[in-house]
Length: 295
Length: 324
Ligand SMILES: Cc1cc2nc3c(=O)[nH]c(=O)nc-3n(C[C@H](O)[C@H](O)[C@H](O)COP(=O)(O)OP(=O)(O)OC[C@H]3O[C@@H](n4cnc5c(N)ncnc54)[C@H](O)[C@@H]3O)c2cc1C
Ligand SMILES: Cc1cc2nc3c(=O)[nH]c(=O)nc-3n(C[C@H](O)[C@H](O)[C@H](O)COP(=O)(O)O)c2cc1C
Ligand code: FES
Image (cartoon, rainbow over all chains, first blue to last red; front, top):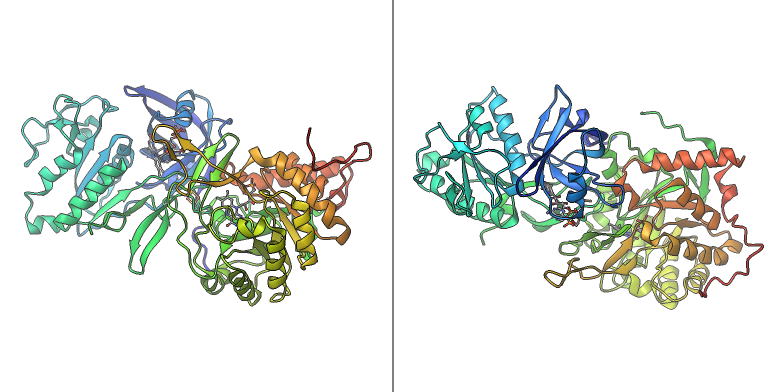
């Protein structure tokens, strides 16, 4: 009999909404009870949720944080259309159907402990999850830096960092308080001239930090990113130019989210030529150079 | 949760194959048979059969994104028959399937008549339980629906495939044609053992901001509850041709609830397919099974087969082709 380790790894749960908090820019943080999902989710995992019974399809959302002890998962999303708008109207006590955790997570390599985590817009959630896992990992002394970019106000109150970061441009001192509490350095970027933020793309801020590093330092670096496609492309290109590996979390329209329909594929370069991989179960995390090759 | 005791009333036979339930997972919606088992609580034992993804002679990469899009009460898809090719399916995928759980049906596609025949021949030499010829895929330029919309071509494909296999041969009919009954009649004469009706209806969606089609392939196939009334009528039309030859039908198109499934059974389908409904509720088959079993018990019907084709048309003038 063939081994079937994939079986029973994704859970369908009637998830009670525990909290729904609104932030400027029509962004929401949604916490719901989904204990089976919380127990096995990893950074990069997502859930496929129902927004409203009138919509025939579910919507994919990255997992931002989980509490295994309290059995909840948390997402951050932005209202962009009908589904997300309906999800935003869910209130405490409402039930949302959650299917998850789904997908291949980010993979850590102990020989590369200097991690650059880049989150753009509503691509921030998996980076927060990853940072949370890193700080609890006793096996390896990880050394992460979190860079976030947003063109709407950040879904948290920014404040000046108390963690010094060599290589950052002058005045780029704004940070995410949660990261600071976790003793993880973070910096922010935006083209909207938010105070303390780097004025420009988050990928340019990443370049500021990466470019001065020498060969030995770069040999310890790996880049992790989630956000809009142009940002991921820029990240993958930057990493390839510097000879650093990158992992990017992609988005595509989804129907089943369990690998059954091949509706969510992206073209990936493999040893045997181009292949179409499913974002839901082969991803959403892919090797940056395979999806955005330089040449 | 691990116990799978479906009530005896749901047992049925289809082309001589024992089905534990009249439910069939539809081609293209459940990958190559293992995908949905990722979901805890899902079991292939909950369905009578699983139709595998459309398979061609050589591997196909499929269409560019976007391949799917939500529409009112349904969705469009244009996957473009992405598959690893028949040899890979036979050598690497079929051996990993657990044939004790359910029946597995191959879904054959091609751009030429010769390709249909060759893929069928290779599946004939495999443990697959039955072969479905998909002459109704709307998402490829050659073959597919281009064959399926012509009764003449449909019959030629069926006759040619018939010659190379003894396994049950199911012809999957397109709704995108003038006279589905005529097509069914021709395929029946050509040696089809069963029918699947219906495949998706062609449609499209436009992003008005960019004025581009949303679907990478421009047009796609519409599925889901939106197509159910059309599918139901087409099944009835096919049944009127197939009934006297005892040729069974897998009715499909938008089935989401037990009531939907019952409607198709009454219209003449011996088995009922579930595709798009899985995407919203991966455990929907259990609910549909339970609903059908409840109905049978309430109506004191012993076997689901006894319900098939029991539409009461005595009082109706049957003018099935004309509307208005
Ligand atoms: C793995 C994954 C993780 C995601 N994580 C997040 C997250 O953490 N926060 C967040 O705000 N958004 C996230 N998204 C994007 C989110 O799924 C879409 O914004 C959402 O589906 C839009 O639905 P809508 O009905 O509001 O918008 P509409 O534009 O009206 O949607 C129409 C249809 O297109 C689909 N669609 C539109 N945009 C996207 C998109 N970018 N990705 C996938 N499907 C899309 C919808 O699902 C729907 O079927 C993620 C997407 C993926 C694939
Ligand atoms: C994403 C998707 C992929 C499909 N791929 C195939 C296919 O490869 N071969 C085929 O015969 N039908 C294919 N179909 C059609 C279905 O098998 C089914 O006939 C149709 O969707 C109607 O049923 P439903 O409304 O329950 O989904 C596909 C449908 C969908 C939604
Ligand atoms: S959404 Fe169906 S395969 Fe990914």
